[in-house]
Each structure stands twice: as C-alpha cells, then as structure tokens.
Image 1 (cartoon, rainbow, N blue to C red):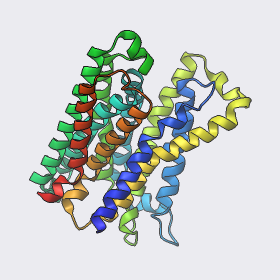
Image 2 (cartoon, one colour):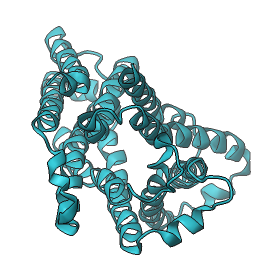
Image 3 (cartoon, rainbow, N blue to C red):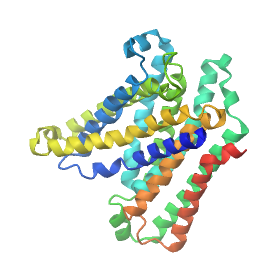
Image 4 (cartoon, rainbow, N blue to C red):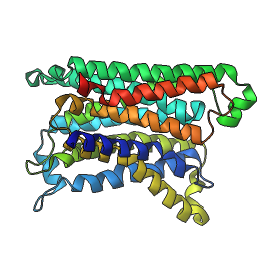
Length: 343
C-alpha cells in the first residue's frame, strides 16, 4: 500500500509540474526573459528553501547542515544544478518550437533516461566504493527502456502531426512551430536536464540523521535549483540588456497580476520535486522504484503534458491515426511507471 501511496504522490507532483505553464499564459506585458526570471525566483529559490527547511530538525539550521556536509558533495550538487539550468533554458525553447505536449515529451523523455543512468555512473566514477552501478538492475534498465519506447512513440505522433498539417494549421496550434529545430533543442534540453538527478545523487546524503525519509532529498534539491537559478538569472539579465527590456520591471500596473501568476507557476513547478521527495519516502521498501523514481516522475510529466496539449488544442486538426499513436505512447508511459515492480 505504501508503494501505491508513493507513486500517487509523485503523480500529483507530475500533474502540478505539467500545469505550471498555464499560469504563465496569464502574465501581461512582460518579455520572456523578465517573467522567466521572476517565476524562477519562486521556483528555484523561495519554494525550494521552504521545502528544505522541513528537513531541518528543531535546534538545527540549514547553514549548519551544508557546513558539516562534505564540501565536494555540496559543490558537485550545485555544479550539476548549473548544468541543469542550461537544460531549463532550452526546455522553454523546446516548447516554443514544438508546443507543450511534444516539447515536454521529447525533452523529459531524454531527461528521464539519461538522468536515471548518469547518476549511478558518475557517482561510481568518483566514489567506486559505494558500488552505485549495482542500482542499475535489469528491472531499472527495463523501466528506462520502456519509458524511452513510450517517448519514441509520442515522437512519432509528433512527426506525423508535423507532416500532416499545413503551415497555417501548425502556426494556429503552436505559433513558432518548427519541428527540426525544436527536436534538436529538446534533445539538448533533455540531456542537460538529466543533470538534476545527478545532482540529487551527489547530494543524497546531505541531510540530518533525524530527518524523516520523505524530506531527506529536499536540502539537495535546494542546492541543485540554486545552481540552476544562477544559470537562468545570468541569461535572463543578459537578454534584458540585449533586448532593452529592463522597462518590464517598471510597469507597476502589471506587477500585482504578474507576481501572483509567477508565484503560482513557481509553486506548481517545484511541486514535482517536493512530491518526488515525499513519494520516495514511501518507496523505501523497493530499491528498484527508489532508483527509478526520477524516471517515473519524468514519464508522468510527459503523460500529463500531453493531456494539457490536448486540452489546449495543440493536436487539433490531426488525423485519428495520429491521435491513436499518441494515446498508445501515453499508455506505454503509464505502464513504465509500475512495470519494474512486476519484474
């Protein structure tokens, strides 16, 4: 029963993350770089900090925790967060050119597979005594493979969509639709975004002994998002300067509206990793599902992002055959979430 609860919590987090781009559509009169930076303050600083505080027992502090942890682990966690930040930037561009459904599918699918594999591999390089590669069991590899198969099927549906619609129909669904350019960016985004899980692997022991299992990864999550915030902030401020959009922050009439929706988008985005931490606390009886939890989260993100894609009519005008292929891909991803437990 605990495993079911854990998977449901992760699923709720995935649904929230897949919904985080809906509030962004309500932001007014700000350029991309301006609202991306402000929502990032909430998504990568404010809410991760609040989450990490839940992992701190009474009488202790976060600074104490980070000071007492091995500095190498702390800095590697932040470093992979910086790399993940590059994925976050290109992730937004992938949705610009492919739409919410297809953009998230390709990027998150790549992220799911590489993130799950890269963590134990890199950890084994630096700490061979931990035998991290032993986590990559047959069940784990099969879970990753099935996830990638589901992503590939959805990618086929996207290709069918691109070839069947006229330019006008593509632009109606996704304003800047560009399948070749979007695929390249989405693959890069997925590769770099996989560094998030690598950062969590390096920071998995950064917690107090008294911390409950469900909160143990939250301090590491803060360090990863902190690194990601640095990358995104530098780029956004550069774009503000390049595009002369500093005036966005002076538009007092829209600050109230935009701040609310940026905060909501940030909270929804962070929910995925808050849910991941809580969910993993219920999966401790299954090392396979614990190892695959990041992959499961990404797979469910893809499922829900395609649900939103259907709601937002990004697949409008596609043939029934294309929709059938899309649904098959979604079903395969859902199966990938619990298949490893049956092996």
